Length: 130
Image (cartoon, rainbow, N blue to C red; front, side):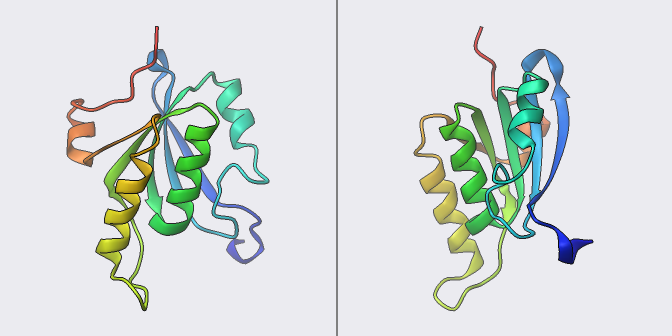
């Protein structure tokens, strides 16, 4: 059950096995980092996935921590800039929080950002290195 969960829910959807890519959909449960206390890293390595597209909830926790951790582990990350969300906080509205995290995460050399429509059209994908 959701109340007993010990980690973030991560749905891995293979987009293209030739590109060694996966789409991660994050939902906050207990830990913001989807790699922490989970088998995510093992599953990605087992399936030889090197490129991740990340979207989901919550911009300021799961998206932030998991995107940065993935890039720090050497994964090439495409963050769906209009594919993650949060809620207003007392100090900042949600749209500014999302904007902030898109900007700061895109500063990592292995993280790029794109709109969902560009990804769906195939105009922006994370390319595997030859």
